[in-house]
Structures are given as structure tokens and as C-alpha cells.
Image 1: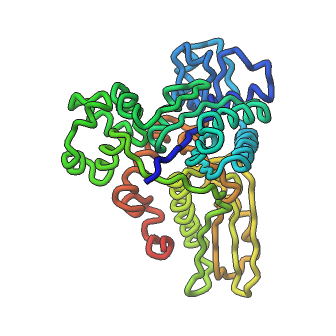
Image 2: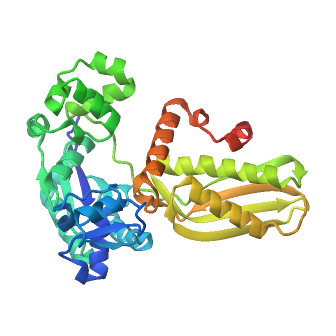
Image 3: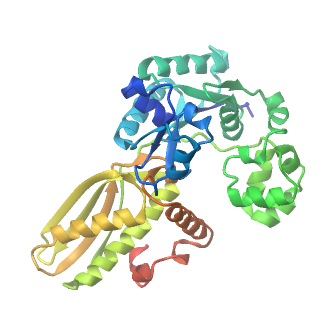
Length: 388
């Protein structure tokens, strides 16, 4: 089997870089992207802010204590989405196979490029093209698979350009903290650390059957990653247009409480789906079909989010404005569009640590035991009808 050449690319301090591109006066100062309230969390921060110990997901109130002189600005997801789209277009035009893993993260499969220009040289030229045409800094890692190339990118930041040949994979990985392994998670890290497993070399020495017993299939994947093994393909990039759910009632209804409960169940399921698949939505649409088959939609554009409570408020408000005929309802539906790839935590700009931790815990339970393992009392009774 021919050895693969996989590139991982990550735009450096992406939100900050977008803001500086738009306003160069923001350069070279401690800059924090986050909500204005003290309940908000840091979405991103400049290298100058990091020198004071500020990190992503830190409460803004804590960041202010560490660096009172830092400038705090509200996130502009439309700007970030536009910048990400510019980079995506350049990579789509250049790379044989490109996967956009998030708003600021990409995988490229450049296997076979060595026969022509050389994978490392080609990747450097692509980086220069991105820099020239967008003004955004980017780091990359080149290696034999996704896991190693992603770790290489992290190790090389900022503006890193690491090339890890197959013969150097294990020497490169061995001394690194197990925190560097993609997808490890805080819970597994802490459990392994309690067992005195701190670096990747120590994890690689653990028996695969023991890890399987501890974590199931995830344990086997963990063992392979510790050995630098990852056969996951680079998936060609396809932008999702929307996700939606609708239901036609067995009997037309005028029970508004029943309809609103159903809409809440739709939102609860769809928002979980957004987070599970790494999306944020910026357009919420609801649809009502009346007993006479007339269909009325109503739409609202919002700041990008995947948060249940925010989307619940929007959907309920749309319904209250849309339902004005006092006729029986035959069908209702909810749709989320204007989707943007992003990690779930970066959309919670104005929410408390408690909100973030609660969502994270709920999603972990659902991933392990299924969606209906955790549902609100309001929507539980609708599960069989809604989730099909």
C-alpha cells in the first residue's frame, strides 16, 4: 500500500487574525474576542494576550483580571465565515482532495505529489498563496495520516511548517503529552494521568486489550493514535445546506400548547445534531401548513449558534408571529440553515461556564447512550413521533 501524504492546516488565532485584517490598528495589542458581559467566555485571543495567561474558553471576567489593558471585542461570525470561505475556495482550487474540518481547520490529501513538485514544497507554496490573497497566517503539519499531521501543526504553531516523515513518527510522538492526541478528552486524560500515563510513549506501551476494556472502540483508536496509526480518509468537502424536521399530525389540531411542545422537541433534537456534526446555524425557519393546505413559512437571521435555549426562543417567537389565522394546523416544521462549520464551544460567547459544561455533559451522555437518554420533561413524551 502506497504511503499517504496528509496535510493538516490550521489558521493561526483565526478570529483575531480576521479582526486585525479588517482593522490593522488592533495588531500587536492584547486582544480578546468574546462577549461583553462578565458571564461570557473567551472565544479567541491574540498572542500578546496569551502572554498574560489568557486562554480560549476562559471566563472573560478572569481574563480582565489577568490583563486589565486587554481590548475586548464582540465576535463577528459573519466576518469569520467570509474569511473562512475565501481560504476554502483557494484550497478547493489547489488541492487534489480537501476536507474542511472546521471554520479554521483543513485536511488535504496530497499523496503522489512527490512525483511532481514534492509535497512539502507544494504545501509551502499553497501557504504563501493563502497569505498573499487573504492576509491570514496559517500553520501546517505534513505526515502520513491525519493524527500525526494535526499534532505536527499544533507543535509548530504559530506559522509552523513541520514535515514528519514515516521514519520519524514514533520519535516525534513519544515525548509529547497525551493531551496532544486528537479526541482524547479531559475525562480520559485525567484518568490516564492518575495511572501515571503522561506522555504518548507511555500510552503506546499499554496493552491494547486493556484500553479496549477501559474505553471500548475508543480505546482501540487511542492505542492506534499513540502508535501513529490512523487510516481515516480525507473526506472531500461538501457544504451542508440545512437540517430540518417536520411532522404531519394524524388529525389537524388547534392545540397550540401541543404544537409548541412539538416545536421544542424539534429544536432540542436539531440543536444536538448541529453540535454533534460541528455546525452552527444562522438562519431559523418555521413552517405551518393549515387544514386547507395553505403553507406559511417565516424566517429569521441570527448570530451563529448551536445552543438549545437561544434557538428555542427564536422558534417560539417566530411561531407567535406566524400563527395568526386561528385555523387548525396540519403540519409544522423547523429548519436550520446558513450553516457554518465550527467547534461547538466557540459559539457560546455570551453564556456561562455552567451553560457550556451542562451542554458538554448532556452531549457526552447522548453520544454514549443515545439521544433520548437525556431530554427535557417537556419534550420527552414526543420522542417517538419526533425522532425518526
